[in-house]
Length: 81
Image 1 (cartoon, rainbow, N blue to C red):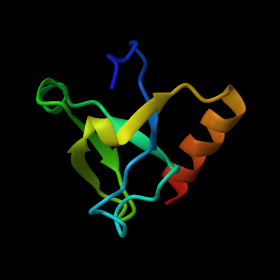
Image 2: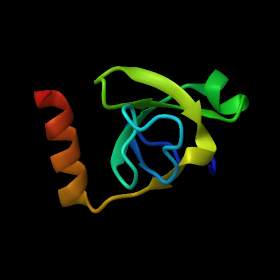
Image 3: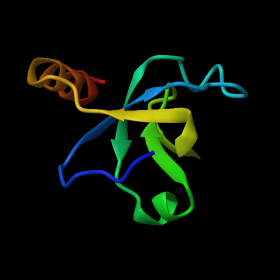
């Protein structure tokens, strides 16, 4: 996964859920939480299907920059959960 630009909230799409079918949905957009130590190890911290944040290999995800309308919707959904 490439280095992130400076912004508060990041999103990534799961492109590999092998071994974690209950925790990660293939092609789903996940909220990414900043974790420099995890990034240094090649990992990413996401809020998965359990609603909790966990570390996964960053190679399982591709960071995206969703359009503002989608971004607002994703942020609203995460606050409502």
